[in-house]
Image 1 (cartoon, one colour):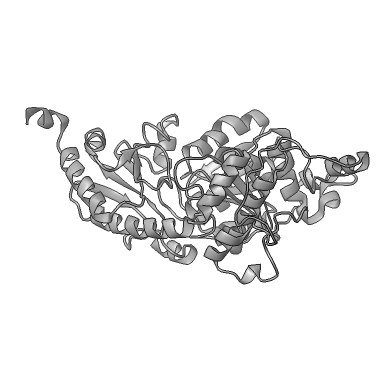
Image 2 (tube, rainbow, N blue to C red; image 1 turned 180 degrees about the vertical axis):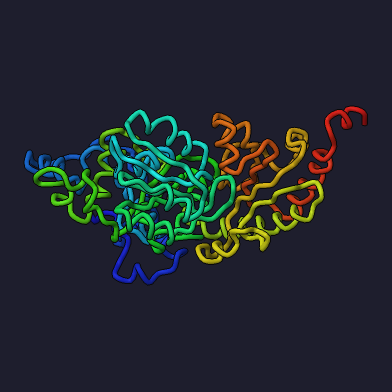
Length: 432
């Protein structure tokens, strides 16, 4: 790997999260800018034919921007440091990252066990796209015994989210890892709600692959899209034919880098789901303030969850920071620095409630600096069968709220006045 953007040193592992967030990926030296520049370049030069041949074979430096770019590489190094991983590939969207992660260990005839409380796009990926490639999946309750019962001889991957979207349930990562590894499978965790290692580092609990929608808290301002796949050092590929077939096999050829190499080869090289340099720059900027934002947003989310739980117009508040949550103990085990910035709750007349909001905005995003709400039943999960929506923790009354940086009292007042409207039936509203 080129050391052009190697901003880490021998003490990097000892540095705290916020220090790594602002320092990683930036080199030192006379005249070197204090920041990550944008390399808006499509191709990189070789001095000789032999250099070109070597680079196209090894892919350790720069050749063509679809594969690698200095700005994107700096972002990847920063994400790797924040997740405590070994390597990262950054891609165009979170959906691209999930697709790449799954296809890096699965082929036709393989099977995936996934928890049902997933982002709607992930459920669609398992139900609509992977079957076209001969990959089957079983969606189960977010519990170790359910995952264990669904494992098959051809299961190559267990998949879950750190905090379920939108159910706000917590994956028992260590238990899932034990189940997967006992059967020769890997564990993949979508850690988007975990905030790029700020709230949770799944690799430290036994996960093998971690993905992100960098569109969310990493970018943080609702202005950029991106995704990433990060791997650790402890995954075992010795029973996966993708890596053991052939002479020499991919595992023999690439060694410890085989998994990360295949992810870059598949997602960027073959499918071209490339993250643009400008997007990488914006996401790297966002990472520098992620801890400040997500810490504040998590504190506000907990206060709002407690406020909503006390309101008679609201039912079914789901937030792992609440002592009433059945996932509160798991949240204490896996989350640090807060319980996340998203909560869900139920309002009887959701349409009237949403229309009455004056500060909070209706939009299908998470991790923005602004507080956003959405009605998952008709939007993010609207294309799923009803049974799948209920399995994901979505009902016709569910509201998902991603908490931003507004003043807590302003958000409380806005919710209170909208709840008064949402508590009244539409016919009663018309009469008044």
